[in-house]
Image (tube, one colour):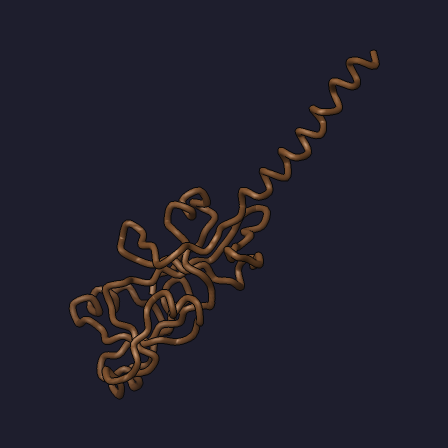
Length: 170
């Protein structure tokens, strides 16, 4: 009887450590560089939607059940800190790291598609920043976007959390 009990103890300890390993599977780390997803976007995890784990490397705990808000930043645009092409440009990686409001010059062809899907003063998901017609007229086609502070992660890392991550386009 004692032999059987002694054999069961390591099994119990293994289960406990296995539970700890399963818990760590809801962790993401900030990617090196600026990885792109299949659509050519950088994916920025909103730090206010996750628990920030100190690094290095810096990581995010998506909690239990796993959940995060992610901003998809298209890389085919030139972003600025203010309206004016002579102003300082900013990279998607820097936008994600610092967070804040940024600007890009709109593309009339894409804007026509965007306007047909717009509803009210905010985008459909409620995350974007749409300016009034007066602001747009005054600023001659500039678009304003808001990016929460966070870190860039790879699309591969996010794929395991499909259905539990809210992705918004800017």
